[in-house]
Image (cartoon, rainbow, N blue to C red; front, side):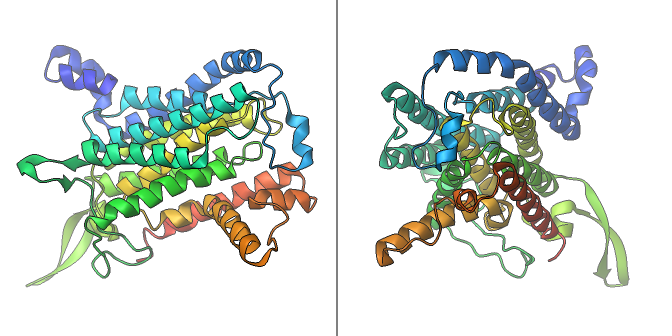
Length: 388
């Protein structure tokens, strides 16, 4: 809204007082700081309200180790704090005429709404089942379909065409060497990416601070990838010519050999808002947690991360960025397949963080080691920018 105000006043005497809003770098930092400050300010009062509203409720999942029973009484639905601060900061500092920005907000908001319904049903029915998995999947699919049909698709000329690049960027390979085009199959691929990421984050949310920290790291990495992919800043490089090499200026994405990102700078503002909101929530969610994220937060943040992977053209790289989430989801899939086919379990309990709990690892040790793994995955993903 502040950026919209600047564009409205552009050219007038008042605009010079808001001239700093022209620069994406300022708005990226400002969005992160604003989301962080809002979360730290609103967090204590929200926790107090949720604790009062959920007094006597059992917010601990049934399919967890016995040690989790001591966490009974901790309020859930803390994801409302994350999403609320994330949305407010984004609306304040992002360019609201950007379709990619609205696509992320729509998917994150609707997925968060699905999670809110799930959390509400768990609390109102006093059990940990909540919304059936098939209904979650159906609602997530409808949300994604709306985003593709009305936000990321143009109907000009009577025929629909996607506004998002349908070519895939292969990690560590320059786009000029390999850049497969999926065409309309990209819609299905995008659905797998967005819905899969959302549910993977949801599965990871089982220990205090376990899901939010990798989400923060992922958002930081996407902020860098979005900015360099959408930046118009030129990098000096040597290019061959008829009279030998000459010095030329190349856009960052062309210099690095990556795909350009439409609205990349504005998506970086979105990422920064997520980072700030996530850090503020971690203050209250770190072990021992004062509040749980709930499905409202894990599904909403997962949807945002999945859509950022798609819009930043890092669909395949996101498997590295989201390494912790991917391992958690695969552990559940492998456990189910193994038990149904052989009658044996691979892990003592899935997702895999519960396996380590049952092996005797202390909860803080599991959490911190998973954080370290997430940072390593983010670093490897950033290396892919130059190792091409």
